[in-house]
Image (cartoon, rainbow, N blue to C red):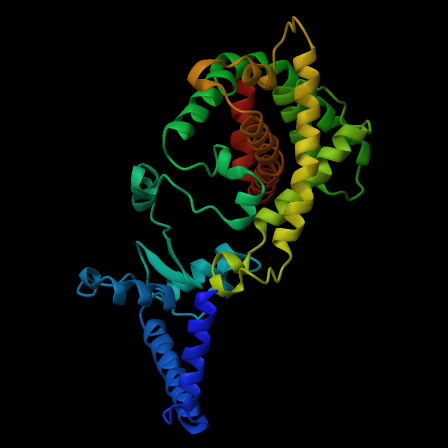
Length: 361
């Protein structure tokens, strides 16, 4: 091609130019290296770390405003270390060290982060449409959550999903109708706790099974016993556990763009293995519901399949929505319930208030 010939002549002429000596090239690379190091240190010198320094230098309108206090972390990676282990404890300690009362800024690589522990500021953030969108992590996008309520961008599609969920799954009528189901699961949980007697056991495991059974009944119309083993439940538990681990892992490629092509933590590889399994599992249940006729107690799958007009969803979107419902309603609920139980066990006054409230019901 002609471009190849042009490129050949360019490099041929450059090789004949006296300016392109090995010594000059070495000096040029050295100067560029020093310039890169100096720029990196300038970005890092700003409160909040390198991502905030880069943002403030590129947006001149913000250079005169008072910066948000926060730790600088390390050059390039910022405060990635805050997100390991007990991240909430580390972030709270960093806020105290920086004397950040209302807001604290820090950097996760190239990502700018703001946190607050102030109730008034948190309320303002949560009630503002400016913060309605959530940044879609690579794992969330790969696991199809960008087409579900949790990570879908704020707009017509997101409002449609929210309306469907609030009307058919979280409405008072549906919650009341599922009361007997919740009582049955709670009774089975108490029986399992009693069976262990005084021996030690992991509460979260039972809570996860109970949460999964509850969501399976509400979303898929499946009812299982906590003490029984079922291949379908075990398959779904494995899918949820793998997805929860992927979404909860701090993925370096989300914050360091120069690592995207390497996938050092194998997040993309694991997601590519998990998604086909999720598609097969949910598609099988959707096919079973399509084959059924005259279901007296429609579940959430039946609701999605019956939608028409502008509310009708494609099969891929329905899979994403159903997968997120099961995913979010299992581990998240189990962790919350475990925290509540631990809170009551450590604070007898809170436990007595719960007893009084239950006695009044």
